[in-house]
Amino acid sequence: MKTILLLLISNIFMTFAWYGHLKHKNSPLIVVILISWGIAFFEYCFQVPANRIGYGTFNAFQLKTIQEVITLVVFCVFSVLYLKEDLRWNYLVGFLLIVLAVIFIFRKW
Image (cartoon, rainbow, N blue to C red; front, side):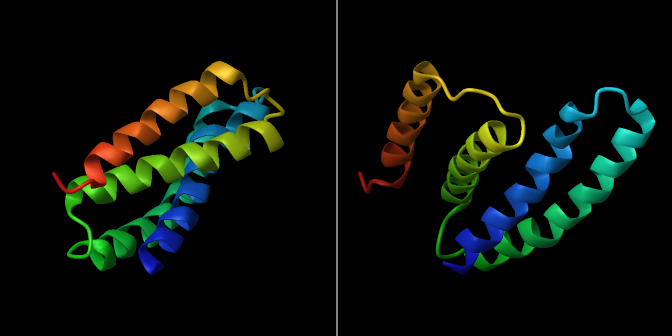
């Protein structure tokens, strides 16, 4: 659970680092890059411990899969609430297919 929480926090920071500037199109690119880089530092402060703590309980493939699913959830919330974009049905279907991939990765074969 600690790994999941740390990954969630890290993804919130990274989503803002990567996409937060889209609402500020008039800001100079160098300023946006530096601010994004600063935000990404905090992402790493949570991402690295999450992977260290989780590795062993999860293998590297599973950790990456967890991280990607969390990224999609955080991104959906961010896009709807912060960027005010619509969450369309085809996006949800695509994300459902990714969830099916999660089932394949975590199932014991």
